[in-house]
Amino acid sequence: MAQPLRYAQLQVAVADLDVAVEAYRRVFRLEVEASGVDDAEGARWLELGAAGEGAVRLLEPSGDGPLQATMERRADARNPRGEGYYLSVWRTTELSEVEAVLRRSGVLVEERPDGALRPDLRAAHGVRFEVAPELDSPPEVPTAAPYALSHVGLAIRDRDRAIATFHRLLGTETVSEIHRQPFGDLEWQRVGRGGRRMFTLLMPATADSALVPRMDRRAGREHPEGEGVHVVVFGVPDLAAGAEAAREAGCEVAGGDGGTYWIHPRALHGLYVEVVARGS
Image (cartoon, rainbow, N blue to C red; front, top):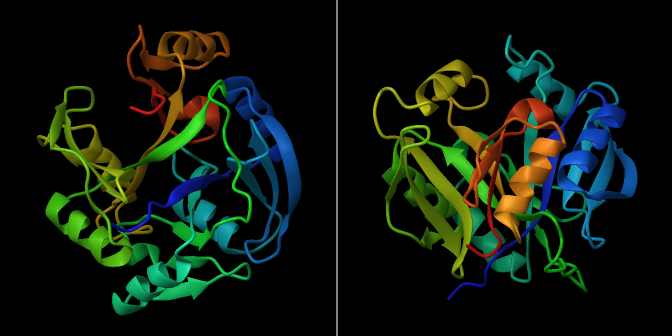
């Protein structure tokens, strides 16, 4: 079995780094652990985490570059600054094997200065991600950490096609059955590598699904059919306590009462978040 990929970092595009970092500290109860400049992206950044892992990186444009172009491309009346999800980083001890699979797929792959591999997002159902070499000493998130990265939920039009795409690009397999979710009127199925989930594939169950207008609005911007990241999933040790803390932090929360809950993007500069029980 292929080794799992570790979801190491979520990167979020924000218009004002100082304002955004306070929101993320308040909601996720994470602390700033590092800062810097990414000349390749045209950005300055801050990393937040609970144990030195830098799980969330907030990026603000520092001039013309890929980050600024992405934010301008997706800005609209609902999100005038184009803030929100930017990139996910998975790390692996088998980067050469992953690279071989990516190269065989025929997809354009950009090699980053740190050795990470970034496939063309148009070939990956609108998902911007990197696969990077594992660190010599990977950090361990404490079991009591308030929030930990879990996986990414993707809005897609054709589940079978998406399953085939990620199998071809990353060697993933399905790791769950197909489920129906009344909230949002959608169906979902998870895919992963080495038994560890990477993506939940979200597809409209009917024409009235909340996914349909979202994909229609962004069609042609980064993916011709408007596919791409819909939600980022975090795990918490106590769902009821997490939902209550999010409400106390001023977030608009759907669900909760001891079960899965969702945090509205307004609280997190365009990032839609789903929260599940740690390890579920």
